[in-house]
Amino acid sequence: MTSAPATSSLSPETRKRLKAVSTATLCTCLFKRGLRNQFLQNVHPIGTYQENMVGPAYTLRYIPAREDLNRMDVFLDRGHPQRRAVEECPPGAVLVFDSRKDARAASAGGILVARLQARGVAGVVTDGGFRDTPDIARYAMPAYQQRPSAPTNLTLHQALDLNVPIGCGDAPVWPGDIVVGDAEGVVILPAHLADEIAAEAFEMTAFEDFVAEQVAKGRSILGLYPATDPQTPIDFAAWRKANGR
Image 1 (cartoon, rainbow, N blue to C red):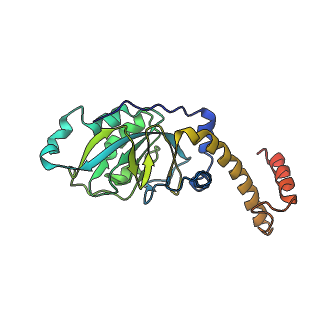
Image 2 (image 1 turned 90 degrees about the vertical axis):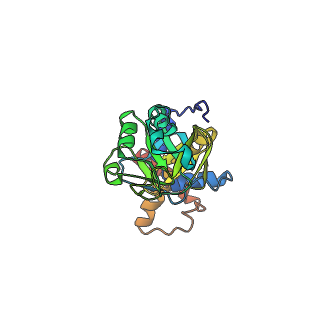
Image 3 (image 1 turned 30 degrees about the vertical axis):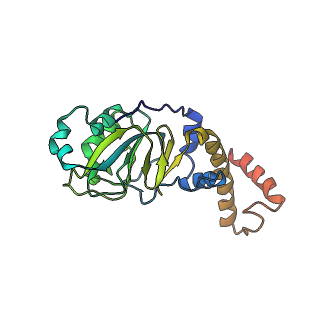
């Protein structure tokens, strides 16, 4: 079963802002809107990356394999959902696997992840695991997983649905939702909220950078964080002007 790819417009300005904010700050913005389960649980970066992973979600769902339908020879089929996902995930998108939080079978390996990188995909995420993680850790394209997968048990999971709503790391992921990953993990932004959350998080980050600088100089957090002291907004405005923020 497959569905038509969902479209998601991600403006250059929103993408730029999301590359400059933390998943922690984004979670705060989501929490204000009543969304508490958008951070993927037990999903971690494989490597160290120069900037945040940002892109609309393109999804693949796995189910427990039925052995007679998921033999090794299924991978010879060019229409296999995993192979299609690797070749059809749009450039700039993030491929997200629903691997049932089970890393016993690999969601993909180094060659498939390398192909995604070559096609310009923005990143890859699984709540299971990947094979060949030492190789994947050296790639420039961000990759996130629960833990490395064993080199065997390839047919333990069966790839089924392409670009449908899934769960990944206990978070709901709809095709076109905006996926953001940093050094701590991955958060999912509902597509219709991405622009306003990116703008709010960008402003919050500027204020928190100001606060961190003030605290490092010995200033108390009382009246500073939160900004209940009338002097704090004045000082923040001056700091922004001086620092071009």
